[in-house]
Length: 203
Image (cartoon, rainbow, N blue to C red; front, side):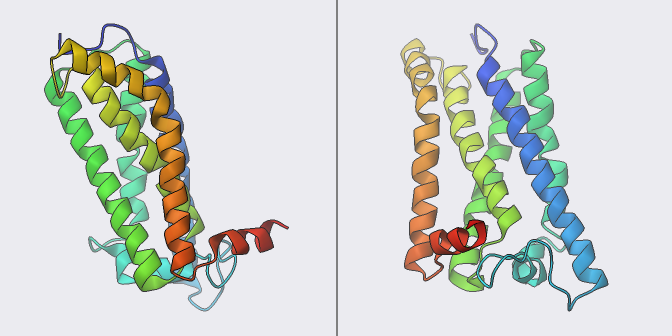
């Protein structure tokens, strides 16, 4: 069988939740981009500190890597997992090629996020709040999607592989936390005191 035997309700719900959060972050960045274009000298609402801000990212070439503002990618891209999540909850069944294409899209998004993280840490030396929200939902979405594609037979028809993949899904939150911890560690080592800056902002 190339499709899961039962509806992956948890996976579908996560796709919807992640899409809404990711889309909202992209929308907020788009609004901030408009504000920046109208008043280039003014501080943005998301400029929380010298190290945690949006302005530097939005004004950099990395903020428009494909020739247009990156938030537009999020506004359109997050629609795909939203539609898939709703369809999954509605009981839709997709062929293997569809899941393979979906997985490729999520992998591309994850790769872009990893590149943007590296640019933020090692070139721009700032952390964009709304960008970090995008990172926060893209990372577990990739983990969950890859596990699901093994589980539903997209990557392998082996029953053993599918069964083992099914047992991995509960570990996605832990893998996500470890990924967050790695990013924070890299930021701290780079001199971007994320923990200290957040403590100042919150307290």
